[in-house]
Length: 269
Image 1 (cartoon, rainbow, N blue to C red):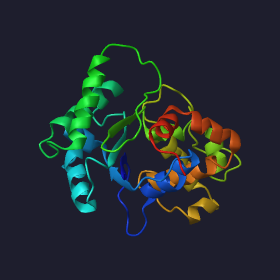
Image 2: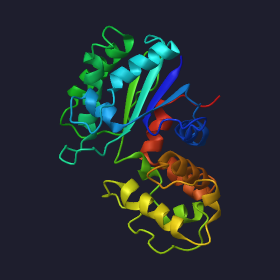
Image 3: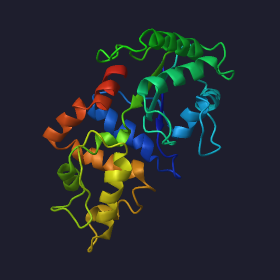
Image 4: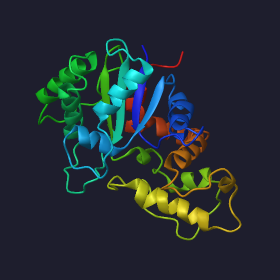
């Protein structure tokens, strides 16, 4: 069984695949999980287009991306597995924020896609959509028991977004970046559960504050771009540093996003 992980992130730039490094090189090993065979960056538009919602680009839908990857990598829908991880936070602020809706829409979209018709992935997506429908209106009862198996499609809607993993402790992030004190313009509100967009509200201004410092902090020798232009690169660097701090690493592993990943993906051998 091969596993393809579709995740919100940036496409490789030349030989530098920061998205793959973030997931396969840093996060999954730190969670005790085996690297996946393929890390495929997608945008939220791929999910929205699959669900028939308004999109901000002309990017293809997730089903088209799956079809293209399967053809290119010779994936077998009966033997290989798909994991799709994306942010809950919608592009369109008028959309209702509901992880249940997003997961159901994704599974229904894959099940009914003419591009995947008759495939093992479409059948598994339909089965999971039907199972979700049976729980409509019920309160969540804890961790989902689903795990990756041959031919499976598993959805992980990250609430509110992946960057919530990084934004729990501002002092820890500051130390991870090699700073001894908060620089001018350092944001407040770290760890707040009500933040819809910790990427824009915390991490982007934090990196902007760091970039204004003179002399330049050592991390600037490794990462030259802004947060907006290098989210995967900055995210991987911060995450790697946080996992070297035992108390922070323990907190990261208990985050709902990390716990779900550790549950559904196979352990490292």
